[in-house]
Image (cartoon, rainbow, N blue to C red; front, side, top):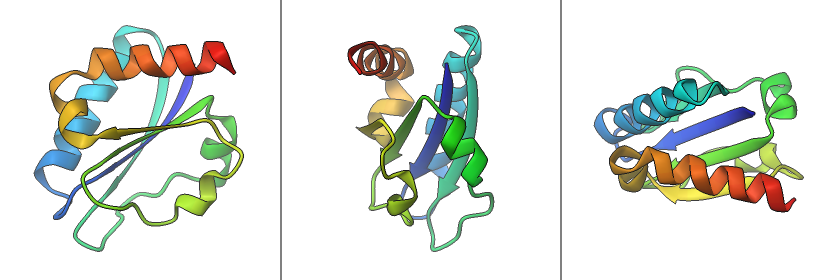
Length: 104
């Protein structure tokens, strides 16, 4: 599975990074590829490329605040989750992603 992950919190420092790390660790355990874009504090240091978005089987948006550029993900399977849940329970997030992909 290929995952595009966008994390977003108010400052883009703590929760966004912790969610990215937690989901990345779980994705690697499962043998999945994951590309990460962290947002917050009005900055996006690394954006997902159009190729990364196109190749992703699912886009996971773990957010505390609205993300920038959501229109880039039109026609993609999207899983919206709380950034806090992503930090606390990344396994259940990836379980949900697997279920969504299986249903589509």
